[in-house]
Image (cartoon, rainbow, N blue to C red; front, side):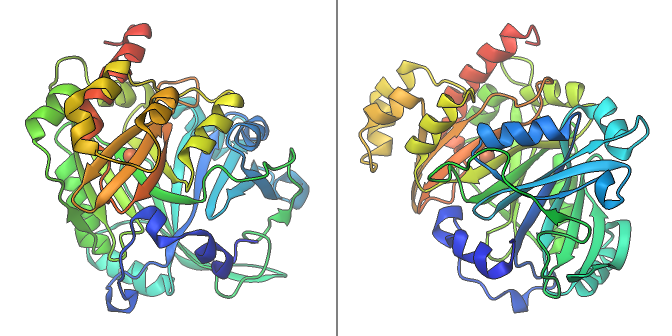
Length: 389
Ligand SMILES: [Fe+2]
């Protein structure tokens, strides 16, 4: 069940850097993340991968057997994180066409809101891209109210009110048994942030879009842009809602030492789209050990990263010895509010496009800008292996 009560309990606000905020004051109130929907080449096999490698649990399904002839859709969860993997059953299914252009990728980022019509009306008045007007979806378990607005590329933001629905997931979905036995302890339990890559010169435009349409604010990070840009070859700004639960960093390519990884993404994805999803965990060491043992590959920071005295000085004491982080190649960053531990997977599909971040926050609201240099040196090594530098 994905009822709100369960999901809030699963999503410790400290875990995702949320702050106290009354959403009733917002022009565009948001309760939280609802789910992320992907179009993939083979949903059944992708569902198996996310079950085995990411420790997620299949809980609902909808497909031809339920009268949905175009797609097979698998809904999986880990705590409050819900992914829906949709694959086309024919060459002209929406998922098949999207897959042909982009490879596996995110099509919808769905947010749970208390009043879909109110949010949609506000967004449209503010110039949002209209995709689907508010409408009801009903089955024997009740009614979901849904509307859709566009964002970068073909990505969409879905607004969902599930307060009058008691079914396993969404109308048409039936409860499904796990594909494999779920792990004893889940690897992650909440979405921390979802990052988009957009074309050169378009970042500011999309930041302003979220500010205007959803009332988000730009969170400022105090890092020298020149340093970040030289090594990462990207520019990044973060917009967040009032509670800071919903955070959308947006990247654009910049001129750096090497070809920008954002350019590589745009080329291989065929335009803007979701670059990575950060998954919050309360035990990054256990999560990384478990995921590695199941075949997930992570970017490996060099030993020099951990042995740099300047870095050790800046980081100070964290909950485990630095050697434990070094063994697993977990990165660490600190700001005035605390610290956080993070690690990035390699791309999780054939194209060098989408990847994941595992993050464990201890007060810090940062996104790891302090790790740009170390991280992107490691990223460049991978890019060079693919011949795209
Ligand atoms: Fe991130």
